[in-house]
Length: 37
Image 1 (tube, rainbow, N blue to C red):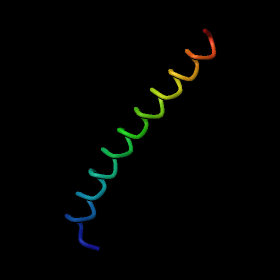
Image 2 (cartoon, rainbow, N blue to C red):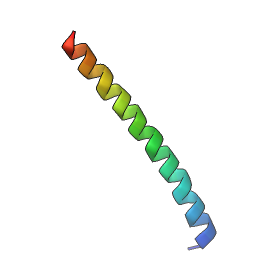
Image 3 (cartoon, rainbow, N blue to C red):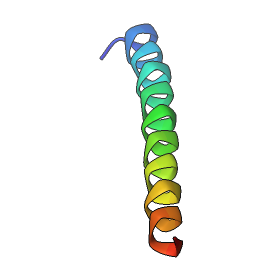
């Protein structure tokens, strides 16, 4: 494994993961809001 490429891939993967987490959080908030109303 090349250290540079794997490291860059990890950074990209981490960015995508954080974006995905944000999306899930938004969906959860929306669903909970709809339940309240």
